[in-house]
Image (cartoon, rainbow, N blue to C red):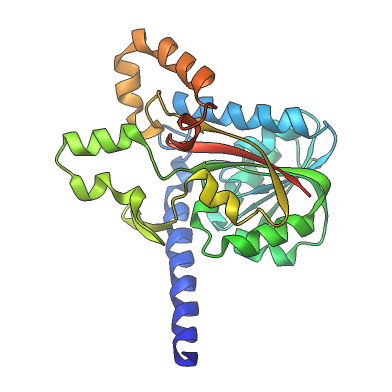
Length: 277
């Protein structure tokens, strides 16, 4: 058994580096249609509102997987102090540039730090958030949960947007095109290779209860809801744009039914809110 441990460690490290390279490769245009279309903006605002509701303005926030810094800059503009972190050096560079252009360098600190490296941080925070699935790329979620508990003040909140295991739109989209193996990617257990820009992102998909299980020792589950359940996932934005009559109706269904039992366990992502015990 001992002989297998170095191999497992190098495998995890290799997967993390693959994921880093994938996001480095798209950082330059990630603010365009790839990472910032109408559906993504809608999901983004849902996380913003959850943070605004639970963390007082002026408090300090930790951003896990900040990407190009859109969330960090929004919170800084609203009066928060934000520590933005990302595993991709290119994404970190984009966030620093965005903070400088916005004149918010005193409100946003940016560090090249993966979520698996949270042990390096010492400061405590009033809230921790992560948007659009960086936590899906972490191989050891229980360790992340313990580190979040250490970094979060008593009573503080986690607000995470996580890629779900059951996405009806995705299933139907790929099945209708005969891409059966791609249709069931989210159902696989463990790290799953997902292609992006000729690179591989190693991804773990979760049901909300599976995800919360890793955090249950340290956090109370306050709420969770589906994101892009009735609306298509962001990579199908062209379909969304071609059917303007459906937009308002599907958005209404997402907003009003996405938090109901059973419904909240599906969708492209789920938004989960937890409070430190």
